[in-house]
Amino acid sequence: MAGQILAGIRVLELGQLIAGPFAAKTLADFGAQVIKIEPPGQGDPLRKWRLLHEGTSVWWEAQSRNKQSVCVDLRQAEGQDIVRLLAQQADVLIENFRPGTLEKWGLSWEALQELNPRLIMLRVSGYGQTGPKAREPGFAAIGEAMAGLRYLNGEPGRAPVRAGLSLGDTIAGLHGALGVMMALYQRDARGGVGQVIDAALYESLFNLSESLLPEYSVFGAVREPAGAALPGIAPSNAYPCEDGYVLIAGNGDAIYARLMARIGRNDLGQDPDLAHNDGRARRVAEIDAAIGAWTQARRIDDVLAAMREADVPAGRIYSVADIAADPHYRARNAITTVESAAGVPVEMPAVFPYLSANPGAVRERAPTLGEHTDTVLAQAGLSNEQRRALRAKGVIA
Image (cartoon, rainbow, N blue to C red; front, side, top):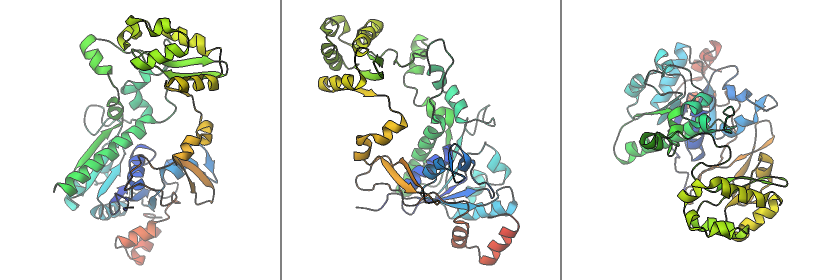
């Protein structure tokens, strides 16, 4: 088996919380050395988010695996000098501060590129580095709203809801990691130089918005919230059972016919007006009512067994407890276990996507705060005396 595909790539992570660090995690999972800069004291705020084990978030364990922690106070001039030193030795720098922050510290793209023309800089922000909203604060929730996602989520006539995950952050992080990979390819395979990747949270979600804008631009159509259904695609919905809900996606033409045959409604399955999606979309209420009448008299397991027999896509709605118990997740090695610094085993998503020849791997647990400060700075050329002096001033920890 060949080595990890990003082995030898050095990434300097200046970001915090989710978006920038998620991009760095993605690169680290495939072999990049990620040096995470954290402020002395509390470090990345994610260390204290949600459920804590012995004072540290278990979310941190998943987000920061394969990374090295170096504590540097970026507000001090000598801390900024350390970033310049590390940036000269880096392939990639990732940051997700509000635009203008790095410029205030003398760490602009122009200044860093002058020091290292091969540097690739990923800048993740709420609204991007330019435009009238660039300097405004922007978290995932606001990006999701601006991208149109929040408008669609929920039941008609009720308040919009969020997905329950910080999709704006993680999807922006994935777009950022993709941009880094393309920039590395351009630099290393095509003789290019470094460049900036400008990834906005709202644009990353907007990129996934399917037909929303094309339909509005041509027809003036505004897609409205539709609960569990997928408007204009039929049938695809959540249907009631005796013990909960089941998802059935019978929207392929041949699949639809098999579904209707299985529930005893060949009158609908063989109706020529319903042979294709456009006709079914016009009569979706009738079709959904027929499916719901069949499912509500049965248990979820029985419905799923019938759908498997008919070769119709269907599934239960998983909680995380269902995920942890599901044999398919285990058979695919989609869940990995990492022992934290405190010695607790933490289950988390494995490395995705799977690469047959150069698979990613969880090589190291998430670091304790400042665990690698001395190692990394010594490798960068700072002597014991220099590090002691910086530590005494509170520049490093």
